[in-house]
Amino acid sequence: GDASVSMCQNLPLAVGRRCEHEKLLYECFAVPGFQVFLESDPAPNLDCLSGNESWGTCNNGEFLCKARAKLSPTTFHTIFSVQSSRYFEWQVRYFRHFFKKSGQEGQLTRLLSCSKNDHLTTEIDTWLSPQYPKLGQDPYVPYNKPFAINHWLRHSGIQAEYIIIVDPDCVFLRSVAKQGFGGGVVVSLANGKTVDVSKGKPFGQKGYMDWIKGGPFESLTKKYCPKCPKVDALAVPIIIHREDLQRIAPLWLSITEQIRADRSSWNPQWNLPTFALSWTTEMYGYIFAAAQLGIFHSVSDRAQEIVGFNKVVSAPILHYSLKLDVGDGKSWHKYYETAGLVIPEPSKDQNEVTKRLLITTHTHTHT
Image 1 (tube, rainbow, N blue to C red):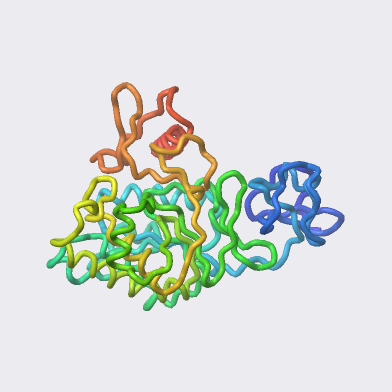
Image 2 (spheres, rainbow, N blue to C red):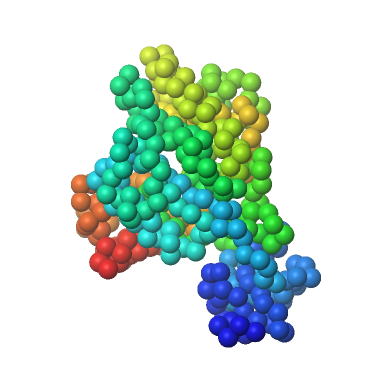
């Protein structure tokens, strides 16, 4: 065999590496419907080994299965949308750094809404999209997100089958999506759980909105998606087949425009800080576009930990959208002028999620 391939000996196998067992090559795979919890777990099929061999070599419930031709590098493509600003600059650099370390397959592209490229173009693959053309009439900057995604899908010649949509204020701790054994795509959630994704069946992180009788989500849906049999309460990450996203993107923009055009007659509930439609309109543009097209997501709140809300690290992504109390009466927030330069060390009474974010980013700042 290959001299660089070691024997499978219940020792951790790095992402993308293979080991040898009885003269055959094996690598770690998520097998839909099966997980390694114990060494006594049986093999899920004839091409995979049991928990006895997989235990200690693979993590997140994966099995050692016969290695096969590597995925085409175009299976996944991860994107996020930004403007050119100091606020986004450090987030972009951090995102790229942790994304590369995570083992997530596929390309990463920053969608930049701007009239010209900026200095970060030399550091990260960038797709330049014009800004949303009507910001002069309605200066709602998040219009740029569906506009840029639509522009990228139409003009970039993108080949990837599955698109991973995230926000720049995310830290990848490990990969969130990979090809499952047998060809499907598997999203990796907290605690070794997985969800299958296919064309017509995307995945979305559970959003902050809740369906409460008489609540703002219900009244907004009744107005803008009156014929929808159901709607998904979604946020990022979204993992979706390219052809599904190509259908959603134009409608995502037009529904966002439609909701914004009615601002003078919005239900007062929609402006409450807990719902914040004035900032989150584009999220509902996406949700209603998908529902109108009959594209429904597998929804779970376990693809990411919200820093400042969740307490234990188990999901593959940390999302630092909230202001954090870092002890000694101090706080840290991505909106602070020095946020990317001055990352405090966590105090000992911090929860695990906050600690992990601060230690991870603090260490990167000082390397």
